[in-house]
Amino acid sequence: MKLELSSPGPFKVLGEQTNLAQKWEQYYKRFEYYIRAQNVTKDEQKKALLLHVAGEEVQDLFETLPNTGTTYAEALAALNTYFEPKNNIAFERHLFRQAKQQDDETVDNFIMRLSKLALGCDFTDDAQKNDMIRDQVVDCCKSTDLRKKLLSESELTLEKVRTVARTFELSSSHAKKIAEDNQSLDTRSGEINRLNGVRCKQPGPRNTNGIVVASGTQRQSGNPLGRTNSSGRLNTTQAKTPWKRYSRATAECYRCGGKSHYGRECQRAKNVICRDCGRRGHFARMCKTKVKNVNAIESENDVQILWEDYECENNEEIFVLGNQNATVPLTISGKDLNILVDSGASVNAIDQALFQQLRSAKTILEKSHAKIYPYGKTTPLELCGKVTLPVQVNPVTYDVEFQVIKGSGKPLIRASTNFQIL
Image (tube, rainbow, N blue to C red; front, side, top):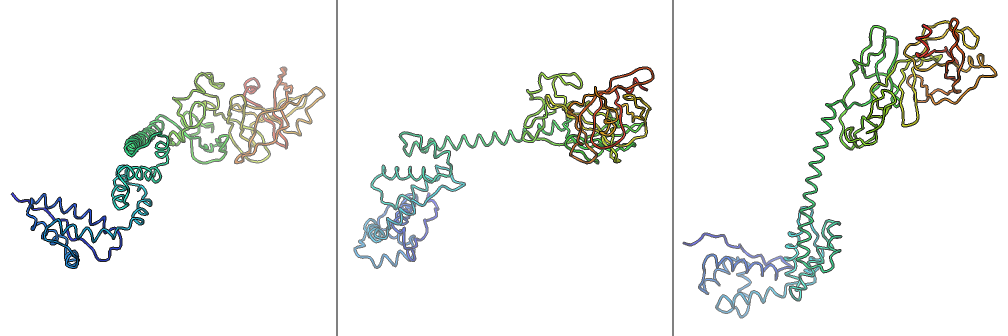
């Protein structure tokens, strides 16, 4: 049965300045594949079919050629003789040297393209051709890492280039797939942490007494965290905190506060005992029970809340400042005073002027590590230091530590003294 196959199509001669020899060689090879597939065996039929399929330009050219003969082989030889001088070797080698691997091209496909370009370069033999293709791959492959691998080979052949390149491309593809899977896993892990309670620090609400929650790095109001009870204090057990989604690159450990790892992986705080709650496994600055209410002093009508932040061995304290009317009469260093009292406070405070009135020859002003911030500001108030003063309540006298603040304002007594006084 005769097969119905498409022919190679006409061969273009006019307007072609270069590559005619190479293109003609490729064309007549395709033509021979065609006549074999069509089972054309007669010599005269081969010659006629060649001129018919090649098209009008080849037919017109053939009529002008000398010594075309009568057989298929003689006709083909005459055409080969005509096209052969048109092969510009210098330009063909220029095209070969300019060839570079494309972004979407594998090294195997690049080698195949170079092999086609090498047909018109008139290399001496296959060994020279393979060496030139090898060198072109090393020079013009798109991957610097692959180039390093190829240059590290002591005896690099074209076949070795194929082997190394295939292994490299396959491993690169596998590594990319693993990275994509890990990134997807990190995204899912971040979602799980979000659902398990990974929270970002946010400023708190203002309660009925004007108290506002603020962290050491965010001292501002807004973004409600909870509700207040009947006394106007922040009910931390009902606090609601917005969720924040984390990936491994932006994660903040809820045990140590470090970056780029999750709490379940933390090694820094694994055996640490919290100074606040006494439990193992987190730093005091990350303790969930560290928020306290406190009143402090300042002449302005500013109010904030205390946040104790422990960094390893350094204690940093942030206070609420503001005027309150809840006072109690006390005698400090023999002087009768009205003291602002807050059972939720964690410090005692007096201003610099009152300290000068209360001090004696035996009074020692020590360095203080406390930090006191006015509401809405990020710069702490300047402290003179801390001092221990005698406080008389009825017949009993207590030694009480006070923070001394530069400026003026009402004095405040802390919670550890309150329960004994009141």
